[in-house]
Image (cartoon, rainbow, N blue to C red; front, top):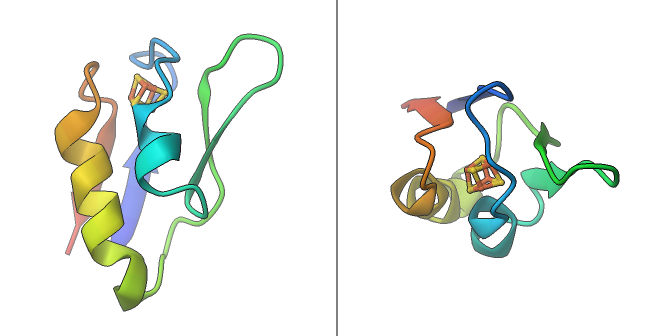
Length: 64
Ligand code: SF4
């Protein structure tokens, strides 16, 4: 799985971090998403898919 984020779309809501905290983090200063792992392991795949679903800004895309 390959994960990409669009920091220009992100509104800093943090749902992705709650869904998959080993893949996503937020910048200290403004809460904008930071990608920790662009190629997460298969055991994290469901959590990452969940993050895509709950992101209100559609800022996360994945290639399976
Ligand atoms: S869930 Fe979406 S909008 Fe919220 S911090 Fe993550 S990428 Fe940004």
